[in-house]
Amino acid sequence: MRKKYFGDKKFYAMVLAVAMPIMIQNAITNFVGLLDNIMVGRVGELPMSGVAIVNQLLFVFNLCIFGAVSGPGIFTAQFHGARDDEGIRHTFRFKLMICGMIATVGICLFAFASEPLISLYLKGEGTPEDIAATLFYGKEYLKIMLWGLVPFALTNIYSGTLRETGETMVPMTGGIAAVLVNLFFNYVLIFGHFGLPAMGVKGAAVATVISRYVELAIVAGWTHLNSAKKPFIRGAYRSLAIPGALTKKLIVKGLPLLVNEALWSAGMAMMNQCYSLRGLEVVAAYNISNTIWNVFSVSFLTMGNAVGIIIGQMLGAGKEREEVIDTDRKLVVFSVLLCIVFGLGLSALSGVFPQIYDASASVRSLATQMILVGAFFMPFCAYTNASYFTLRSGGKVAVTLLFDCVFVWVVCVPLATCLARFTSLPIVPLYFCCQATEVIKCGLGYFMLKKGTWVQNIVS
Image (tube, rainbow, N blue to C red):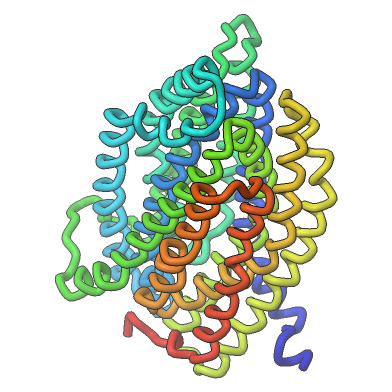
């Protein structure tokens, strides 16, 4: 039993070598995001709600970029396992083209439809004055954040390719530098220090945009200065030519992942819109609970990335089927156990963290209860996330589409819509019911992993 589900010291050293730099980067990024959120929260409840709504919209864009680089990333990891630098170069070019299109569409959409998009989350209880103020803060924040979309996309292209080719330290360094810059300028610009005016939510947006350019400069700069270590970057911009056969594979395997991330993130935004129908207090409380959740969720998100990288490289290197399945099973178990620990830590902070915010007692109470719900379901999220990355690493994109976004739109969104619009169920039990769908998804994940059809080399 122990040999089946647990690895030896060498195995965990290998896993941590891949996972720890990613986890450190994500943890620091989310922790500074937490401090950013707290700083905005100290300005007031309405500015915090406006920023939270915009970040829900930007979350959809961010996940679209993630999906755009994830599809080609499957090939990148397997090309690296096969030591094919030309193949990696082609996937890098494909990422540039698809992310360029997404960034163009995203900027145009947010620039010309900001008010109706933000207003979707302002249909619950609240005075007309509060709703108007929240809309104003959201529009001011989004207007500046648009300048950070392109560097965000480029950073994801470079960082994703570096991680898939075994270099995890540089993206981590870039991420750490970015969050420190973000933290410093948040302090200076939000509240007004060193002789500069207090800019409030505008200052938070400017700080984020500056940090995005810093991160891009570090990650892209290192890649181009170390072309001997990463030869794929040589000539990467001489043309955007990609062999037709590979382009077809990238589209067939990559497009469903892009669609999946777009629809999944849109589904999450739709569920949050359903929660917002319970009033502005719920928007504020969910923002508080989601901020601390993001810090702790790095555990299973990082392990998901590690699963995708490790299993993808093993498949590309032509490892035996049983060895791949055995490694994946141990990675999934490790992810779940890790998140049990993180879930306990999150629950321990549930009553303390909301007290930091300048919010009403009712908002703080709601936030505490929502944090506890999130902590309870964290191990279930770990299993479903590891299952998703396992299926993705073998190129089973159609299955991941069913497993992820179809599940959200067929099960989660209708449930949230019905409970929010046609019942008077309070927000906490409503939120619990929606999160409980992860248990059903765990059963689906177990069935799909057990079949083993995901074990395939797609670059040979």
